[in-house]
Length: 122
Length: 143
Image 1 (cartoon, rainbow over the protein chains, first blue to last red):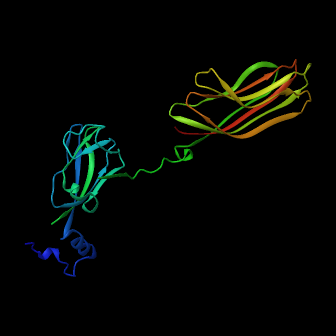
Image 2: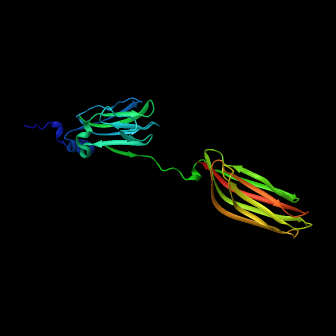
Image 3: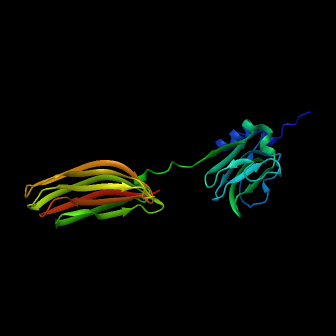
């Protein structure tokens, strides 16, 4: 039997974006902004998070970065994120459960900075 | 996962640290001579030139004993110095004192690192003097 929680119902006094998010994602969401430093060995960009509904990853470094959903990614063989300008994004409405999965990254140079913006259910 | 980029297009050449260059030479009242280089301009590494305008002129100052062909040449030589192309040139006899002959052209010649722009003159006459003017307008920019 499915339960309808209070947070899944639009009360009518929320901000427009909040009421939209409740309807779209079945409840309220929050935005989490973090910075990751990726080196020349594989490390996590995103951890597995079943509450995540969308994310966007910006490569702010001057090094190219390869992304993957597995930890065996190598430089030049993953999902390419170009230096200085690359953006990787996923949304549950387009990518489905892919948005929940962890993302690994490896950079072509040390201390490569990524800006990560996540939207997750609260 | 979707990948995109916020890269902007590379600026046009005139917005890439552009520098206006004038490569000029004047040789006044010069006696007959073999090919003589009057001015050179070598394109440095990391930059390119757009050669936009070239001008050459001659004026006979004093009469020749025997009038010969007078040359004024503006040319570009490749980086290996094995080949060249003349962009503009005069080549004729000008026996009349006070007579001026000039040629100018707008051009769009790309000059690459190591290539050299040269201005040369030559006078096959016997005696007499000629004034030569060579003028070039270039834009140097980041390669």
